[in-house]
Amino acid sequence: MKKCNNCGSSMPDDVSVCLECGADLITSRTAGTGGSTGTQGQQNDNEQIVNYQTVYVQQPVKAAPDAMGKAVASLVIGLVGLFISIFAPVLEGIPAIFGLILCIVGIVIGAKARNKIPAGVSGRGIATAGFVSSIIGAIISGIMTLVVICVVVGFVAICASSSASPTYYLALFFPFI
Image (cartoon, rainbow, N blue to C red; front, side, top):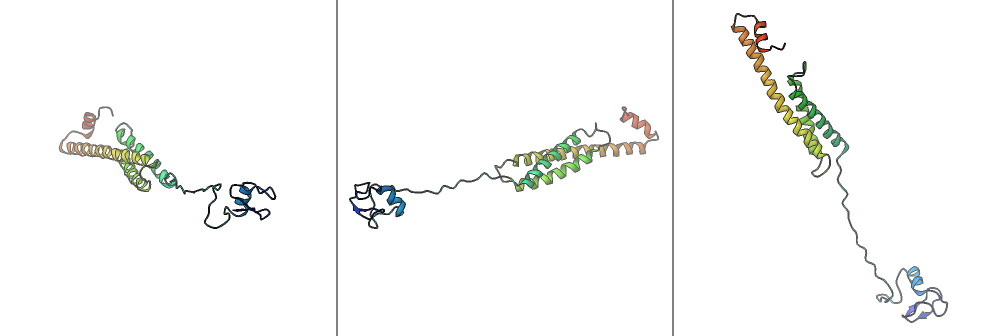
């Protein structure tokens, strides 16, 4: 048996409107009694059972802003160091050792940025590119620095062992000067 929340009369279970006052038994039942009717433990056929399920959505992981800044700095420093390392003989006044120093700084900053940015997060690729370009630049710059040191040492050794003037050998090895 249903009980009307408006007038309190008892009604059969198959009735949806109170026969005494005309109140809607379905809406008055769910609004007035919080969804329970009649006796505890019984469920009316007109009641709807709603099951709620909690859904957890994982938010995308983002890199920390300071890590992104380090990643971009590593890329810029690595590319500048690589450029200076490759074009050191052509660029007058900028020795290859300066490119080597820049590349070492790029390696350190790139490694720190890669450690702070988790795998699969945008920004890690930038840090990796800066790290790799810095390593390549350091290798090229190191080779260029060794070549320059060998040429200078060889030039000094030739000049010291010979009676000819250093300008003669300078013109011999470097005709474009």
